[in-house]
Every structure is written in C-alpha cells, then in structure tokens.
Length: 68
Image (cartoon, rainbow, N blue to C red; front, side, top):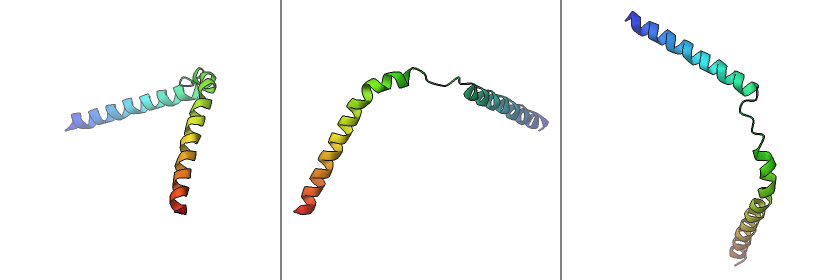
C-alpha cells in the first residue's frame, strides 16, 4: 500500500514539474507565432469577401421568405 502512496506523490511531483516548465515556456515566448500574421494579411481579404457574400445571400433569402 505504501508503494501506491509513493507512486502517487512522484506522479504529482512530475506533473507539477511539467506544468511549471510549460508555464515558463509560454511566458518566455516559446509558442509565439511570428510567421503566420505576416502571411495572414495576404489571404484574409478573400475569406472576408467569401463570408460576407454568403451572409448577404443568406439574409436576402430570409428576408424574401419573411416578405411572402
């Protein structure tokens, strides 16, 4: 039974160490994406146009149904 308590304590300790390492890496900028924002500006316009055209078509169909 004591081995279960020891394994539990060790696993909690390892989990805390990994969590601290993760927090440190996030705060130090390890996961910052510096490439995508510069490329995204090249393609956002097409996605916005497509989204708004779908939205306009959808709302115009809804309005025509409401009028009838």
